[in-house]
Structure formats: structure tokens, C-alpha cells
Image (cartoon, rainbow, N blue to C red; front, side, top):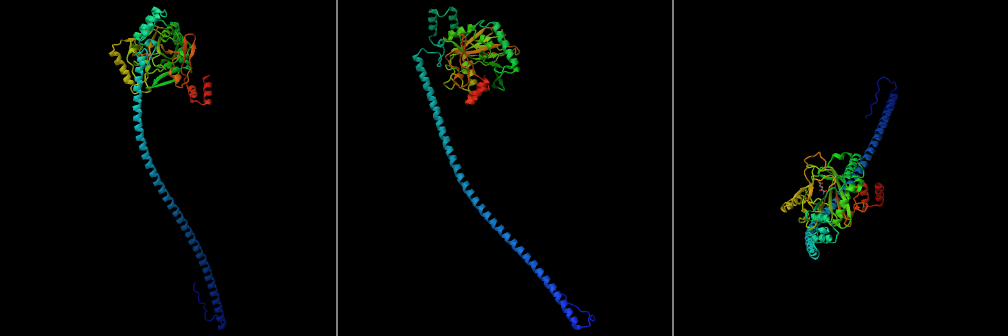
Length: 455
Ligand SMILES: O=C(O)CCC(=O)C(=O)O
């Protein structure tokens, strides 16, 4: 700020020197004030300059930090690029390796197929050799003694030795010829009624130990019996083992006697099905689905638990169809491997074979208590139900000789083992439900829990 000039109004001081002094003193004060102002301004500027210097230093530091960060990021990016290039090379080489493995697998698959075919051919050759060495069976899968080519001579020998009466000879000859025999009045009607009533009571109570098989949305389902099942198309499983009232039907003396003739050993009842309504099952041979250690050594027996009326889906069968050629699954098996795509072809083949051989298609219209025993290979099924409301109460039991093993003895499934039924033979059944699944799971605590649940 420019200093202001001191002024003297003329005529205010009488002493010019004094006036001069005052003027100067005023001038000095002015200048001192001005110097003080300048000093303040300078101090202010110096503060500002040091602030600016501090700010510049901060910016400098920030710039240095950013440069360091940019350097780090550039290094990281180049590491990633190197890494990516390496993994791309690895992917390429793995793809090549996978392609080579696929080729190798395909080659081996072809070799396995070749060897499988070769083994099947060898098995067949062996079987031919075997058939030439021992008295042969109709089937390469063996069978009961009555299926052997020398069975008629053996029947005659047994008759001559007094082991068979005329009626028994008659039954065995019919069996040999037709594959089926009817045993009228095998079960007392009172016992049939008791069984039907016990089943009704089980349906009402939804007994926890009984299992039913049903088809739901085209899929087979096995589950516990429920109260609503009575009017449904369900089959109850294994009553021969689980329901005391089923024992007289499964082990009726007439049936046990006939099984003794067929098996020459005590029978083992290893599976049973209770039907309230006709099954309309297509014609089939049990050998396709029921598996035992000797494929043809078992029979089925159908017992009527009421007088069966026409139109209720009565049992039907091709007479003598047990003598048709074998249907051999995958060139080697008598039973159908699970979910085999040839199943429809097999069912059609069976009809075609039976018709070509001119076999009679016969229906079974039994009175309450009558039983029909069929050979494992008989083509049979349930005829169409035209009276859908009418019942067709029946129990079907499958038997094998006691030394033959049902599949579930060998598959690791929990089962009852052979349980003696007086002197009539044995019974067995697979154990179902969560307890048996726990038991199959294998660890000791789970097995203990399973035993507890089952007890
Ligand atoms: O009773 C029926 O309708 C058929 C039964 C049957 O085929 C069987 O139990 O194998």
C-alpha cells in the first residue's frame, strides 16, 4: 500500500519548524505502519509459500506411490499372461491325451466284444460236449429229473419199484406232456376264507411288516401295505412267510406231496404273491424273471381262494409250452438281464412260438381251494378282465428244491434263510424296508441299528 503524504493546512501552526517536525513524525508513523503492514503481508506470503511447498511434496509422494503400483500391476499382468499361456499348453496336451485314450478305449471295447462272443461260443461248444456225455436235458440250462430225456424210463422204473402209485404216474406223465397239473381241492375252503379274511384285516390295519408291489406311472414300486390298498391292483408279497394264515395254502399236503415227486427233495417256498384282482399280465415264462441257482429247477403254484368267475382275468397258459426252445438272453442267459430292451421282442416271440407249435391256450377256472402247479418254463399270464369290479382271490407261490438257492441268497440282500415248516419243507423270503437297507450298508453301528429296528 502506498504511504500517504502528510499534509499541513496553512495557518494551523504558528511555528513552521515545529510544524515540520510534526509532519515528519506523522510521516515516520505512516512509514512504520506501512512497514508493519508489509511485514504482515510478507509473513502471510511465506505461510502460503510453505503450504504450497507442502502440497507439492504431497503430490510428489502420491505420484511416486502410483508409479510403484503401476509397476506392480504390470508385473502381475505379465505373470498372468505367462501362466495363461502355460495352462493353454496343458489343456491342449490333455485334450490330445483324452483323444488318444478314447481311441484306445474304443479299440479295447471292440476286443472285449470279440472276446465275449468268443467266450459265448466256447460255452456253447462246452455245453454241446456236456450234453453228449450225460443223459441230456431239453434245455442247455438243465432242469429237474423229469425234464431229462430219460424221464419216461425213470417214471416206469419208479412205478415198477413201487415208489409211485397209478395216480402219481398219471400226474407225472401229464406234467411231462403239458407242463402243468391241477390238484383239485388242495386247500380246504375254510382255510382259503381264513387267509382272505386275514389279508382283509391287514389291508385295514396297514400292517407295517407287509409289503405290496404296485405299478405307479408305469414303474414298479414295492412299499408297505396301506389301508387304501384293499380296492387297488396291488400284489402282497411273501405272505407264505409273513402271515400264519397263508401257511396252509403254501404248504397244503397235496401240493407238498406233488412237489416231493417233482423235486425228489424237500421244497423251499421262496416267494409268494397274493392277488385280489386279475393281473392281466402278458404271457411270460417265470424263468425270465425268477432267478434261482439252477435256472429251471423251480415251479409256480396258483391256489384259488374263492370260486373263480369267467371275466375276472383268470389265469391262462399255453399247454406244453415248457418244451419250446429256450429264449436265450444275450446269447447266454436264461433270465432277462435288468431292463433289457428285447423284452417286448421276447413276449412276441413266445406267442409266435406257441402258435407255430399249435399249442392250446387254456384258461383255469378253479373252485375255491383248487391248485394249479406249473413248470418254470410254462408260458402263462392273466387274461383280460371284462368284469373289473369282480375279485379273483389267489395266492401264487414259487418253490425250488431246498438245496437250490433263490437269487436273493446270493445277491447280498438280507433274507430270512431257510426256515423249517414242520416236516413239509422250508420257507424263506427277502427282508425289505429301511432296516434291511441299513443292514446291507455294512458298518457295525448300522447293522446294530438294523437288528434293533427288525426286532
Ligand atoms: O395270476 C396271474 O394272473 C398271473 C400270475 C403270474 O403270472 C405269476 O405269478 O407268475
